[in-house]
Image (tube, rainbow, N blue to C red):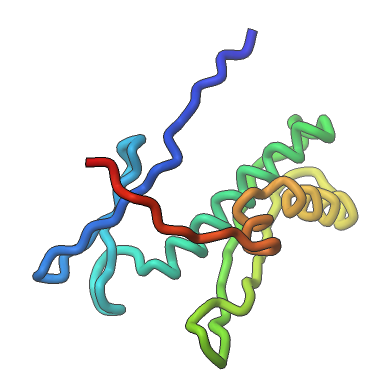
Amino acid sequence: MVNIVARSTTVGATLSQAGVGSVLAQSGAGAKLANMASDQGFTPLELMDAALAGCLVLSVRIAVRKFGWQERFTSVDVDVTHEKAPDGPSRVAGFACSFRIEGDFDAAERQELIAEAHEICTVGNTFEHGAIVRDVTPMI
C-alpha cells in the first residue's frame, strides 16, 4: 500500500530594512535571498531556474520508472539558464535546459526521457502555458 503524504505549497519571503532576506517554505525548507547580485543567497531568478532544474531531474526519474528502465539509470543533471526579455515588462523570455543522463541509454532513449520529462514537469508546463498571479487577502 502506498502512503501519500500531502505537502504544503505555501512559500513566503521576507526582507528586513537592512536588506537581509530569506525564503521559507511551510515544509521547513529555506534559503537566503540575495538582495543584490553580490549578496550570498539565491536571487529570485536563480530560484526560478532552480525550480525548473529540480522539477526536470525529478521528472526524468519518473520517466525512467514509467519506461521500466530503473536498472539502467545512474543519475541525471540538468543545468538551466534563462534569457531576460529585451523589452518591457521585466520578465524572462526563455530558458535553456542542458541534460546529462547517465546510464545505459542510447541517444534516442535519452531524447525520449527528456521529452517525457518536459511533459511531466509542472514547473516547465506552468512556464510554457502561463499561470494567473493574483493577490489575496491575508489571514489575520
